[in-house]
Length: 67
Image (cartoon, rainbow, N blue to C red; front, side, top):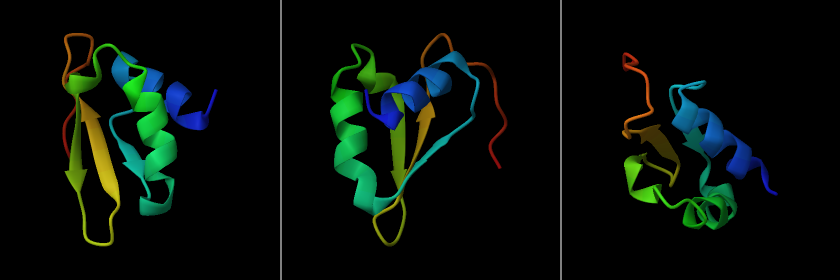
């Protein structure tokens, strides 16, 4: 299990509001993301430099304000 499997679970449950994925760790994140049946509910926003911020939009997510 890589660290992103646990972080995706926390994001889905609303325990964290967002998940920051550095460019260098994208493929480790992608490996965990592809295992999720509801992966289409994880929405990423790309930033300069290749970093990505993910939010969960599924029905289990809590209403979290965006910074």
